Length: 223
Image 1 (tube, rainbow, N blue to C red):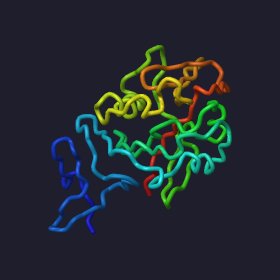
Image 2: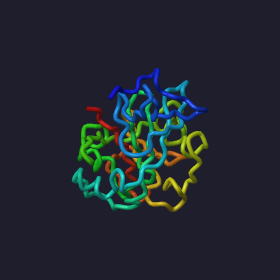
Image 3: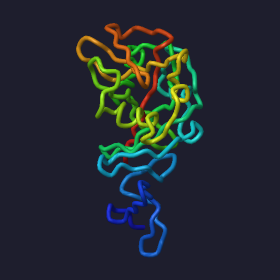
Image 4: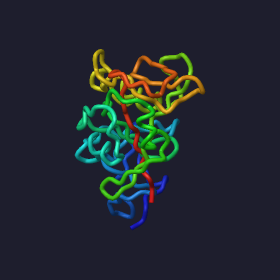
């Protein structure tokens, strides 16, 4: 069965439909495995990135199961079945971000100990491999820094670009445990955590306040 090429893709408004007719047949394959979840995307053609929607924990993985797969026991599990935000990255990767922080009272050192900061850790879910990352959000004093993974993907499910989730729906409401999630960024002095509209930076990566959480990012490994 032929694969979908760029010439075969159909754009309808801002929807990129990956189910197309090719030589009169319905084709569902493409140059990349689109992974669990919807294959219909809200697409920003100028930026080459987009949002597929929510993927349930049942269709990808629960927070508790991911922690077990990584042998991550530090912190306290929460929001295990909150699901995942699914994106097409401008790098050509399919990526998932936990909709809510799935652990709290956890330090960045705890996450680094299981190699889940920079994609070194890989987990197998349903026969597919995923590299486990923390989100890149930029360094400096600004609460929100544009042109970062945090801004281009996660933040835009709050500001109406991809979706309009509330702070509480994203686990960032006042009083939510883990509302400041550890980011991948380190500027040589500060480690960074971010909610949606605010950030915390600390010099100690072993800090594990109940306000500090783990919101992992999974990148689908293409085979």
